[in-house]
Length: 270
Image 1 (cartoon, rainbow, N blue to C red):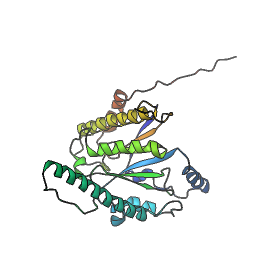
Image 2 (image 1 turned 120 degrees about the vertical axis):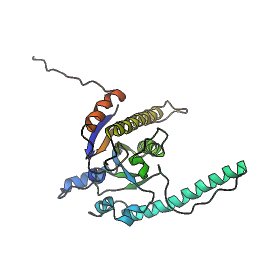
Image 3 (image 1 turned 135 degrees about the vertical axis):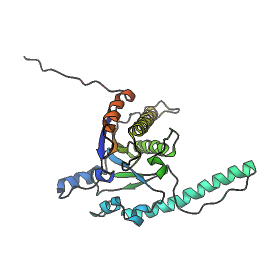
Image 4 (image 1 turned 135 degrees about the horizontal axis):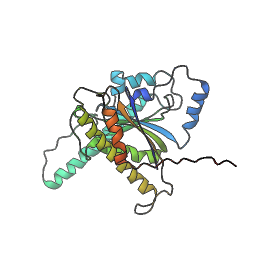
């Protein structure tokens, strides 16, 4: 059983930006939580350049610089490590394509030596100086997500699937996901488009949760972890959507997810 919450925000960065004049006890609690098994993660949408946060001086990069990172490497250094991993991933993909082409007798494949990631790729950064978030999953997207319809096989949805699978391995129990897979609302996002996109992500997230719970519950071949994970899922809508979108998306939720009825216990007089 999971808890799911639907909320709105100006941006995903707003959900993890530190509060001004935070007290010392909150900072201490955040540091202690880094060593527990109930971590919190957030999905952030990024372009293909793994150094985008540093090169563009993104809002997230500025938030990370507001206070000193004492537990992990600074964001810029973590991103440089991502670049090295991207080079290795590119090489692996090129080798795989080369083998497939050689097997089919086609030698027209071209090697790509840039570090740009593919749509649907995910990289992770760790933080101790953000608000209520210890891990940020950076999901690579493109501009087509702003207007076109997607299917369950879209690379970005596969990226969400990989993120949910990683949460079990990393001890993450709370995750924030942009429901429409867009950072900000735009004029071409009609009510019908928003409802279709939300329905697709609803169904995919439900399926991914069932998948990881089935594996962890031991239903997979060879068994698995005995305990079934319990998640707190925050599905985030961008603020500024057309009037009525939030109500329709909220009303659609019970038609896809099974809701547990609330229990009311009345106190009996002695």
